[in-house]
Length: 262
Image (cartoon, rainbow, N blue to C red; front, side, top):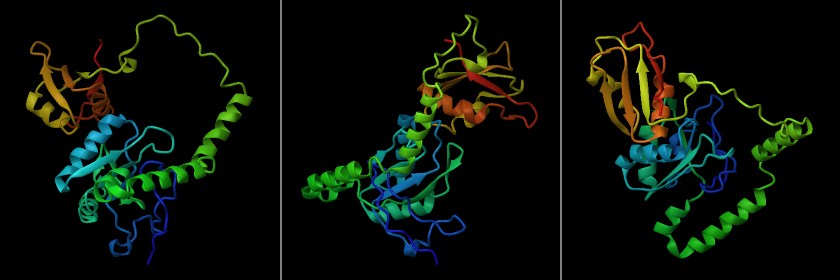
């Protein structure tokens, strides 16, 4: 039976050892795990904007109990990871049991318990020790700042690039031509092409509502093989575009999805 490693994972510094997995890559048995109010989530889709990701995680987990905090960052160390804090370990345990492996934005989530309490949890459950908790966390972050293996690896790569003169090479000017549809800048409105002529608005609503913040689907009566899909923000539109481009709606023809021209 695999046992967990007494690792210290801080939701705010996130530069610590990750929980040990069994030899086959699965988490340790539930009864052997350290249990806390905060879940540590890995294998998240790195293409999703941080604000969209945090909102999606909160929406997913709030059905199990009050979500005190969601911590996620776009930096190198935290990419593809997040922490979700609840008011009690029991809520966190139930949420992990039922959500582990859920394909959020097409990637199954890997979930384990964080090894330390988050600031939000300490503030709610042990407010008198919040100052000491914060000081301890900052000291740990300062102590490990230069020993973090990911940061060292990134630093080595950057130095190598500078030595080769890559970092100092100016970017070539792009010719002044109209940009192809595939490379248009982000837009909250998507342009769909090559749709089956029998497609309905309800079918497109069902397909694109799998992704958060869908606002509207607009069909073109005079040209049935195109449509526009609008989201509340560019980040949500980008996630849907990446997930559904070349999707075979009728099982045969791939639909083409690009950002609409502004």
